[in-house]
Structures are given as C-alpha cells and as structure tokens.
Image (cartoon, rainbow, N blue to C red):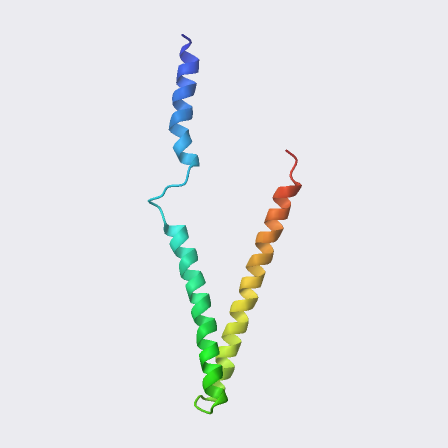
Length: 96
C-alpha cells in the first residue's frame, strides 16, 4: 500500500467538512432573515402611516418621512438584486 495515497485520502477527508455548510453556524442566515424582516417592517409601517394619513389621523411630515424610508429600502433591495443577477451572469460566462 502506498503511504502517499493514504495521506491524500486522510487530507481529503479532513478538508471535506470545510467545504460543507455548518448547520450550527446560522449567523449569515439570521442576518439575512433580520434584514428581510426589517425591510418588510419598513414597508408595513409606511403603508399603515399612509392609510392613517388618508383619514386625517397622521402627520403629513411623518408620512413624507415614512415614504422616503420605504423608497430608500426598495431602491436598496433593487440594487442588491441587480448585483446578485450580475454575479450570476458572470458565473454563467465562466468557461468550464
């Protein structure tokens, strides 16, 4: 038996878990989930404030601020989406 092939197999076995996702490490998942929840909350708040303003129960200044925040949130989401699509298209252009 060749010792080099045995150490190569051991090295592969030890390196393999590094390429797999760690189910215990949910920091990225939690970060994305929090970001999406903040985005939804911003849009929900703006919608509620707009409805209140229609019936005269909300300050127009607060409505303008809420609409500006929701516009910024949507623009940010669109920019991130565009960057993800660009990255995906670059990956598709890579030679195999």
